Length: 286
Ligand SMILES: NC(=O)c1ccc[n+]([C@@H]2O[C@H](COP(=O)([O-])OP(=O)(O)OC[C@H]3O[C@@H](n4cnc5c(N)ncnc54)[C@H](OP(=O)(O)O)[C@@H]3O)[C@@H](O)[C@H]2O)c1
Image (cartoon, rainbow, N blue to C red; front, side):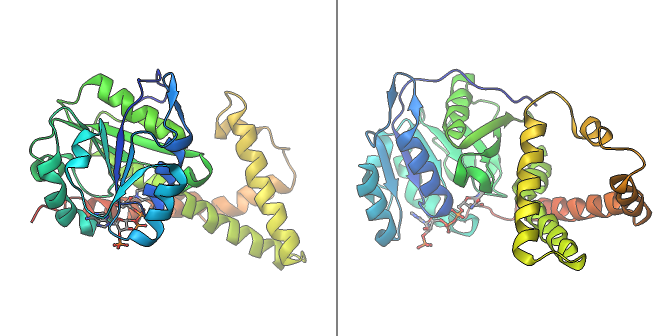
């Protein structure tokens, strides 16, 4: 596993299948992203979305081509990003399969759809990458884990990295099984952060602060602490130990330890992980 910035690859024509929440974020990011010596500026961006209302406007905004069902136009793309919901995968792959060319890179963001399932549904494709971005992709601050099928070329993996670096940072996994654990940490992670933020805001109100003040203090504390963490090499444990000894923070840590808060959090993460393992592989081809 390793996190790094990849070398920018050459300009790529990209088709996005499914332009809902994530597909449209990626489309917007790619339309604006500098890749190689060029930017997309809509050139070579092709959107496939069965719901024409919003996607037509998006295609117009990005100067991209658009259709409601995958056709021969998809075979002109260098990269095909699959971004439908997992339950729509079987139908989408039936529509897509005849238009896939072996040299194309297929990137799937579908939770729980394995590389083997993708390869079976799209038998002509040889270059397959699974990607698991997270919600901060909305503000170009995602962390995306990527895993490639064994026969995928390293240049294809670098192309996939470059695409997801348009919405944040990337991390490369070497074992597909790890993606369920990744989903339980960074995929669900924004949810955990908001859960903790809500609990802290409620705690702030229980000691006399107004709701608006509480939310502002908690939000800025999370933001500032994350910025401090990202600003240097110190890890969470080292940063925690810089806080004043014998004061209120230490009293809180003791109360957290007495209540086994860390163990409870680990139980929650394991519950998410078990659920993703259960869901993974449930989606198969028809
Ligand atoms: N949202 C996230 O933060 C996130 C993070 C990581 C991974 N993912 C993965 O990303 C995928 C998409 O999630 P989402 O939240 O973006 O879902 P979404 O908003 O529902 O978008 C999916 C879109 O695909 C369209 N669609 C379905 N079948 C199609 C087909 N055969 N051809 C063309 N378009 C088709 C849907 O149209 P209809 O609405 O008409 O069905 C919908 O507009 C999921 O598989 C999810 O696991 C999402």
